[in-house]
Image (cartoon, rainbow, N blue to C red; front, side, top):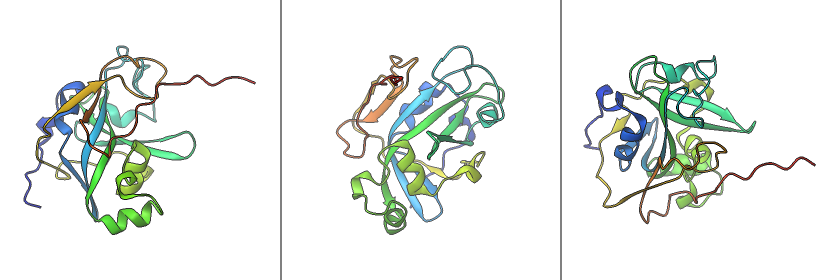
Length: 195
């Protein structure tokens, strides 16, 4: 592809600094490559109530406390995988959620994985992005150094509240490329009603 690789030092910073700089970069996994168009940052234990690390280290989130540049994959709503890239030095517990992107190579493979989806929607949303790239539980802890390529910086990056979370939603750590059709729609958290 002719693009340079990002080093571990790139990720050894606060997630809210790394997140906007990931936009326009290219993730490579097997035959599929995705140019990131939307991400969300999640902060430190005890500081960011929306982060999986807020209450400390558990078997589920232990990868987030590992070295920077590794993939933290988690299962959500009993049906989807989502992926983050760990930030800050080992022991800190912070990451960037990979929310959406554009398939730039391996389009046929991504289409087969996302049977029937329009091209714009192949990686539009964190679970769809994970499916398009073929990520699952077995990829939790995957070292992403050498798999995140430098890309063209976007002309305009916007920031706003994180989407679909019940706590810390107003923190403006969701970043996206303005006007990109692969960015997922913003959705505020809607509390579940008990019936």
